[in-house]
Image (cartoon, rainbow, N blue to C red; front, side, top):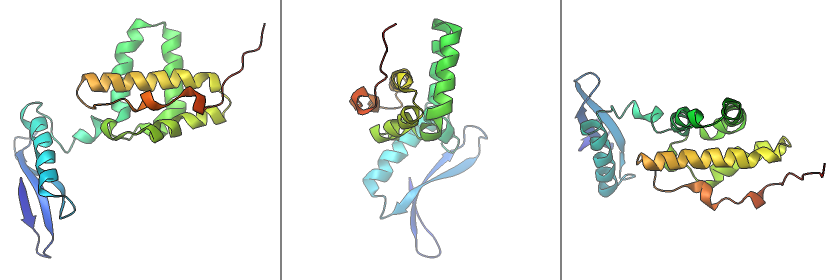
Length: 173
C-alpha cells in the first residue's frame, strides 16, 4: 500500500503488486486521499492482496468476476443440470430479457434491494406478473451461490416481498 503524490499535489492510494497474469510489477489505484481514509485504503489493500496472493487473480481483471451476470452464469451452469431443460431455458431467457440490464453490471457485493426491485418492475409492467416469483427466486439463488463463494455477506432479495408487485390472478378453469 502506497500513498503516491502526483506532480499536481494530488495524493492517491495505490497497491503495488506482481501481476499473476504477466509476472510483472503493476499498480492498482485504490482512490484519492482524503476521500479514501487510511483505514479504508488498508481494508481495500488487504482485499486486493488476498486476490493476488491466495487466489492468483489480477485485481484489474476482477471487475468481471464479481458481477451479478458472471455469478448468475456460474450458478445457472450448475443449476441447469438439475432441472428440466425447458424450465432452465425459460429462466435463462427471463433473466436476460428483463433483469440483466439492471443487475448484470453490478458488483454482487454492492447490490441493494432497490436494484432487485428495479430489475423486477419491467416484468410487472409487461404484465408477466406470474414470472416475478420465478425471477426473484433465480436472483435469490444467485446471491446464495455468491455467498457460498465468499463474494457477498447478505442476500438483498430476502427483504423484498412479492406483495410489492401486482399479483397474477388465476381464473378458475
